[in-house]
Length: 204
Image (cartoon, rainbow, N blue to C red; front, side):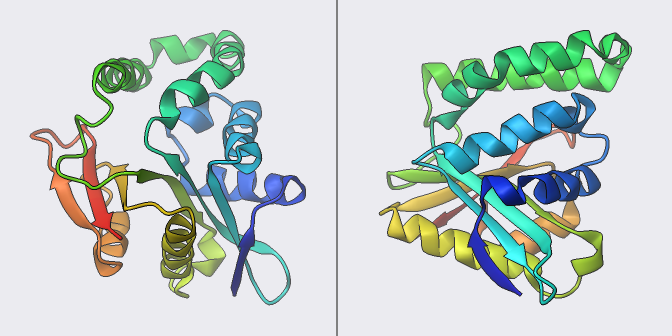
């Protein structure tokens, strides 16, 4: 397995991996068009990192994306209409209690970050790279693809002269947390409730 820069041509395969890895999550519920736009944002942004893992058959088997801290405002503004179309074409989502709660939590977090982008990254040296998403195809589980992607992401963050990295994850996602900890990341914000996100960080 090798890691390469994610391109538009590889995007459909990576969208498939994302759907497989994040079934039931808010962004997949918004539809393929939204997921495609979300991942494409990282591919075309000159400040972002977008990488893909390619197996011996030259098929995509994983991906990882991220951007410097503060990216959320631009990303959400750029994807606003795609997100609205996703909701309007799936009005039943508004009846989904978990979906509504997730939206509310994200809006609250975004407001806090707009007031103080450093609120959830205590004592981290700047500039800070956010790891936004990582997914591995089910067929590649247990083959070290996740660790390979994490190492490549760290290497790229260093090339971008980042001083530290951070990410968020739900506490119940034990497999992801184990991967992050094996790669040297440390928990810096641990929420009181299991449905709230926790944060990990690593100083470069």
